[in-house]
Image (cartoon, rainbow, N blue to C red; front, top):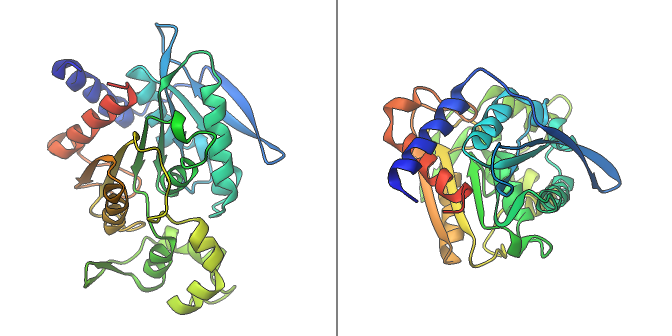
Length: 299
């Protein structure tokens, strides 16, 4: 890819992502998954008959794929030339961490690949937070594994147990060192509603591990992950993230590096879990955007 073209597209991506103008999708699909229909907004660029495809997976948010920041990002990817499919996953939009979302991601990916406008060799998944973690897990499914060229995430985690531990204690580890950071109150409340006692969020880590061991295993990325050896990985995270602490990106990177996958990681400053601030004064924002442009356009 011409470096000036890449820079121009990266700048477009960042500017549109930060824009307050939300443009509606060109189509709304109904995706069959597990006996239900999932609404999915399809954003289609203008121009050539075939486009790179991106499945955009939201995290735990009540508005699902209609969350304004998700729409902004979809508009930005559309602007640089990608066809973007944005499902609204029922459990995730009800703030539930549920393995059902994995199959919904698989079925959504197949739906995107079945669109005539999609260049089958330039198909990727990008997930935000919990959506990123489940996109990694879903991508090992045999129906889509060899059809995905790249995977990307913003604020994803490797270990659900570590996130529950952080929500309980406000502590996270880096190598052998333990650090403290007050967890985001909203995120802590979501964990409390799903995993805590009705009036007491005081389960210790061992109790959590025993009570929710099956969910922890299904909803975590580990070294047994079976991805295509040709897939490319992009990990983006904020060093100030108080929902998913940044060492989770390091854990993911270790897993992908162990598998010999082509990997890029970017740790951002002045960003929270869900919002980027003053991106224009930090080089890493532009570098991450340039990497996303290269991957999403298949260059």
